[in-house]
Amino acid sequence: MWHSNAASAIDVASGTTPIFKLVRTLVAGVALLGAASVNAADRVAPKPDWTTNDMPSQHGRIALVTGGTSGMGYEDALALARAGAEVIIAARNPERGAEAVARIKTDVPDAKVQFEAVDLADISSVRALAERLQRLSRLDVLINNAAVMSPPERGSSAEGFELQLATNYLGHFALTGLLVPLLRESEDARVVSVSSIAAARGAMNFDDLQSEQAYNPFGAYAQSKLAILHWAFALQRRSDAAGWGIRSIAAHPGVAVTELIARGPGLDSEFGKQWAVDRDKYHSAAQGALSTLYAATAPEAVGGAYYGPTGEEHKRGPLGFANTPPAATNEADAERLWTLSEQLTGVSYP
Image (cartoon, rainbow, N blue to C red; front, top):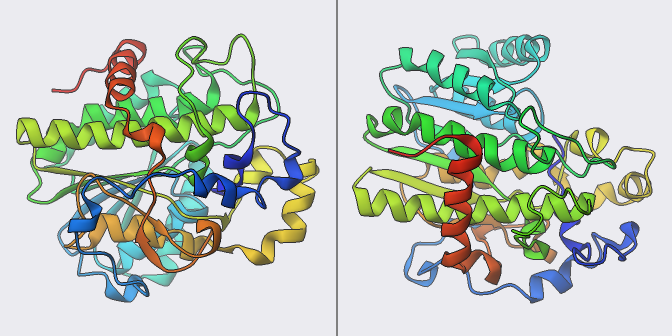
């Protein structure tokens, strides 16, 4: 997948910003960001040059990665398998799933990795996956990675939700809620949800949450990534209040070269053509996965924090605390979104 935070530069209200300027205007969006994650100044920052070589052993841990057949999700699964974890890749396409499992086993002959089919844009499919996973004794790591980005035309989920909100956020909200009991069985449960610096340009449009009145591809993408931040922080508050023992952590990849643009705006789009020109400025899927892997495995990773690259325009560079958009600190919006999400998905957290 191609997790491009370039979409953050679009003018959500009007959609008038030329697409080819999106990446270059990211710095303006970053300038509007607020302080880093709550109380981050009092926390231990990641080692800037942290890599998968710094990952502690994951032997005996069970991890689920959504969208793990390609891109950063695949890199997450590969790194976790190398570290000894039992890995479950959850994605839509069984053929691609089999290929991903085979590739990992080629690199890691003793890997414990399997594929489970799920369509995050279909709540019944999400429920079916959660039911199948009840065979597990526990779940230690849940990486909510799968995403779609900015399809030119508005798509709909099985329930009629806008496709990006459904896939990127609502499906993960439902899956996580259904897996909370398994996560609570872990001695160190992590829920890592992948957002984007596109969230800095996002707005929760509660009057037209599903983009039925007006659809802006990049605006809808940014809204879905802002929703992920709201939810990740609200999940940590609930875990703390109820004593669930779950660390809910958000991460963003910067701008990584994966397949997301080909499946979204398209390589022949204005955005795609400019992407081809600028792609050497971005980093690899493996590099983009580092913030997620840090959140999933580092002992010092903090629940309620937000991690990502801190270099130029936050597109790549050293790992650190990511800047949190001011909109993502609005707890009233977060609680409103949480209640609405439970209503839309039919999933209530324990």
